[in-house]
Amino acid sequence: MRGPILAMSSLLFLVALSSFSITSALTKARQVYIVYLGEHAGEKAEEEILERHHGLLLSVKDSEEEARASLLYSYKHSLNGFAALLSEEEATELSERTEVVATFSSEGRWSPHTTRSWEFLGVEEGVKGPDSSGRRLPPGAEAGGEDVIVGVLDSGSNRDAIPVTRQQSVSLGLCSRCRCPWHSPKRFQVRQCLPNSLAPEHVRGKIVVCLRGTGLRVEKGLEVKRAGGAAIVVGNPPAYGSEVPVDAHVLPGTAVSTADVNAILRYVNSSSNPTAVLDRSRTVVDVKPSPVMAQFSSRGPNAVEPNILKPDVTAPGLNILAAWSEASSPTKLDGDNRVVKYNIVSGTSMSCPHVSATAVLLKSAHPDWSSAAIRSAIMTTATTSNAEGGPIMDADGTVAGPMDYGSGHIRPNHAMDPGLVYDASYQDYLLFACASGGAQLDHSLPCPASPPPPYGLNHPSLSIRGLNGTITVQRTVTNVGQGNSLYSVAVVEPMGVSVKVWPSSLRFSRAGEKKSFTIKIEAAKGRPGWRANGQFVAGSYTWSDGVHVVRSPIVVLAA
Image (tube, rainbow, N blue to C red; front, side):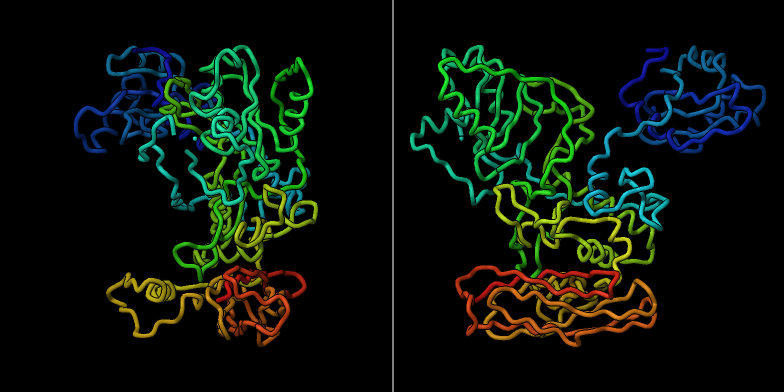
C-alpha cells in the first residue's frame, strides 16, 4: 500500500513527534513528514538502519549535509521509518519509492481533552490555579515529571483464567454488605437480568429495569438484547448507593442510583402503562458529596500482613476516561465486535495512575526523596473530609474509615510540602520481611534471631493486630520543611485504647534533620467502650507546626 495512509502501528510516530518544536526559518518552507518503511526485514544493526534512512533522504536532497540535517528521528526498533523535514515535492518523490510504504505529514500534538479528575484533586483540596481551573502544577513540579519513570504493579484478576459457564448468577468482587431482598430464586434471577432469565414475550420492545449485585453489568444488557428489549436501566441496590457506573452497553442504556431506581419501580408498579425515554447523555459536574468511596474499592484489613494498614490512600477511580486497546471490544463480551480507542473505566486500576502521577510530580520536585518518603508525603497529607467539609462517606451511605480509604483522599499540592516524612531504608524493609513472614530477601543480610515486630517499620500509619496489654512503638520523622520549626502532637484515641506519644513536641533546626518519638498503645480494658470482640477501632496522631499537618491513622484490633 502506498500514499497517505495511516496504518494503526504508525500512530506511534505521531505520538513521538509531539516533542518536536520547529523554530528555524527552514521550517517555513518545509514541514515534518513521517516516512514509513514497514517492518524491519531481518536482523540489522542500528547503524545500518540509520545509514539506509540517510540514503533515502540523500536521494531527494541536494547534499549529504542537508540530508543529515533534515533527519529528526530514526525509528530503528519495532518499526522501520524516520521523521524528517521535507517539502511537499520531496515527500511525494519519496512516496514513489518501492521500499516506502507511506509518507504522510505530522498531525501535530495529540492530548487528552478531559482532565476532570485532576481538576477535582485541585478543587477538592481548596487550591485553585490562576485561571480558577484548579490545574496549577505545585511549586517545584513545573517540569511535569520530566525524566521520571514510575513502575505500576496492578494486581487485577484475570477473568479469562477463571473457569465460568454462562449459566453461573458470577461476581468478581467482595461485598459483605450486599443485601438480597427477593425470596424467589427465579424472581431474583429475573430482577438481576442474569443470562437466560428474561422471557422475550414480556421484554420485547421495552425498556427493562435490571438490578445490580450479581453478574456483570454489561452482561445484563446482553441478556436484555437477547430477549428483544429496546433499552436497559441498571439500578443500584442499597450497598451501591449513589455510585453510578458508566458502561459501553450493547444496546441503549443507563445506570441510576438506589434512590432513583426505587422511584422508578414505584412508578412502574403504580401505572398500568408506564413509559420512559432515554435522553442523550451529558456531562454532570459538581456532584455532592464528593469524594465518596466506591463500592468496588479495595478494603482492609491487610490479608498478608495486618500490622501494615491497607489501603494506603484513595484516589479518583470512578468513570475515568482511559486509553483502550483496540484488540478488545469495550465490553469484552463475545459477539461485541466494536473497536474504540478510549473507554470509560472504573476500578482501583484507575486510581493507580492518579497516585503514580502524583509520585512522578513529587520525584520531579524532590529528586533526592526515596520511594518511602514520597509515599509518606502522599499519605500524611491526605484528607478524610469531602469537598464540603464533612466526613468521606461510603457508597452505602455510612461514614467511611481507615479500612476503606487508608490515610484518606490524596491531595497532590499538599504532598509537595508535607513538612515531615517517615523515611525507610532498604535494610528497614529487609527487617520487616524477616519479621512479617520470616523471608530472607537478601542473603548478604541474614535475618536476625529476633527481628523488630512488623509494626516497627517506620511507616506513615500504625496498625496493631491482637492488642492485649501494652505495646510500645518508635517512629522517626525527617524534616523536609523549614529549617527552624517546632511540631506539636495531637492524638485521637481509638475507642477503648489509650495512646500516649512522647516527647509531645519536636524542634528542628535544619532541613534534613531527623527526630524520633515513642508511641505507647494500651488496651484500656477498664474504660467504657472497650471491646475485646475482634473488631478494629481507629484513631490518629498528628504533628503540626501551624503550617503543616502531618497526620497518621491508628488502627487497632483488640485481642
